[in-house]
Length: 137
Length: 137
Image (cartoon, rainbow over all chains, first blue to last red; front, side):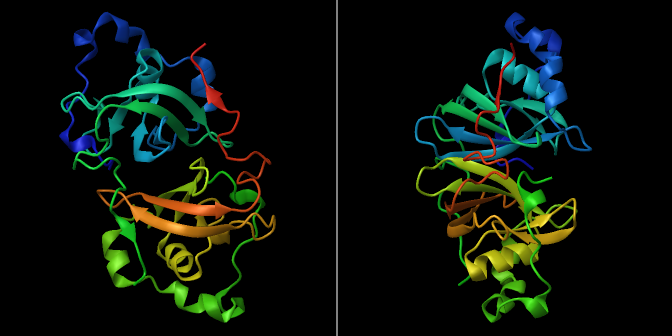
């Protein structure tokens, strides 16, 4: 499950989307062919603050979420628990303006650099990893 | 599949490990209980350069890989394609000295900050994402 999805509002059905989002549901073929989605049709996305370089969170996208993210330049993910799209910040206002997207060398992970409004974590911390260090003590 | 695993040598059987690695195969209970491994017993690990803050790669760990990583402070992962442990840099020399590990807010992702020797990607690029930008053009 993604770190922050549970407090977010899902993206409305396509008929309710603003016009600018409609083309987004079609992922360009060149991108679709480059991404190696897993058996569930998902790819993990590492979201990084473009300014501070902090790693903010990890969440998942399907082809539609990636298409909408590319077309709208806002972070939109797929909730594995709810099986629906969600736009980061839809309710909290802590939206993500996309700065760049890159695929890794074998095409099965996305790195998304964003301009993050407010804290990235639904718990209120700057990132989903803030203050959660693992030790073997 | 992890980005860089294919050119790496697997970790030898436990009997061949240096003594310092032996305790690592036991993950402390407190950590085991905090991590939400997936149905395959794996957790995704985002590896970040502690000095430059660049995101280097995403790979996976099972409980044993996480235990060895904690105990040895070297990045050790689990290869999903080969179903075995592999130590980053075992053949290339591009090892990862662990600086810190953190779990995200719902416990299903690890962020590992490392001191990376040499390029992180088996293709020779600094990170697995270098020069692999996605565009919708």
